[in-house]
Image (cartoon, rainbow over all chains, first blue to last red; front, side):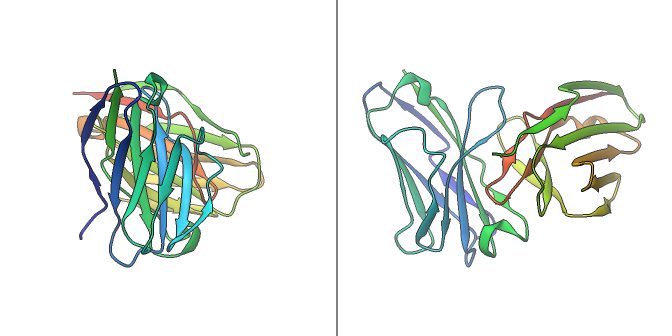
Length: 115
Length: 105
């Protein structure tokens, strides 16, 4: 596609519910990044994929967070047993080459609200 | 982990004014990014630079690698420039907290 597509755009989850957030990067983009942005804050890095390999997951806040990109294109960020502190906008970005060395394209984000 | 500081946190300007937003970081980098975020979450990449200066329209970005400092300038500011401007470094993007710019007509 022409841009990075994220779905759903908005998600309301009850505390304890599992959620899955989808990112569809630009076709052919090697690198894919997930970020968490709390209200009024800058985005915080969660995890990075190069093709299907998850090369860095140091930003995932707990073992309730899991990301995958099994075929090196679409990625899913899964949050198990959601907590209120998980409420944030989850942003995905992709880049043509490894480690984003030629710039990034961002999706519009998924706003997750845990009630 | 690189620490990224931006200033000012908030900036209000009148249309036509020259705007400067500053960014400093703690650890040497290969590239620095300036990004623009509009209400609703969409982030647009403005510049990626590793040395010197880049210009795109009314936007100018400069970086001083030795001083670990970058600036984003907006000439002849316009209300449509109102947004949050974020500086980020490192491959995984360590973000500053952003500068909220409001340009009044």
